[in-house]
Image (cartoon, rainbow, N blue to C red):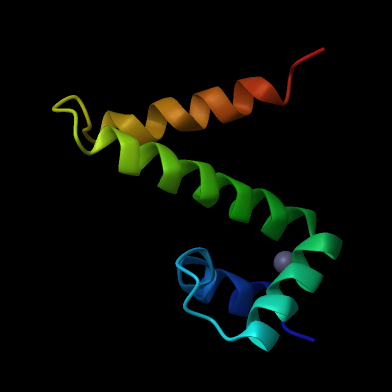
Length: 79
Ligand SMILES: [Zn+2]
C-alpha cells in the first residue's frame, strides 16, 4: 500500500498517464480511501484541464490558480 506522500509525488505523472497500469491502480485504490489525496487529485485534474484551455488566452496569470481555488472551495458550500 502506498502512502499520501507517494501519491502526491506521482500525481502529475498519473494525470499525464505516465504510470504503469499497476501504479495507476495503486493511486486509485489510495484515493478511494483517502479523502485528502482524492481532493488533491480532483483539484489537479480540474486545474490541468482549465490551464490547458486558458493557455491560449492572455489572461492566464498568477491569479489564475487562486481563482480556481475559490471556485472549488465555493462548490463545497453548495446546497
Ligand atoms: Zn492519501
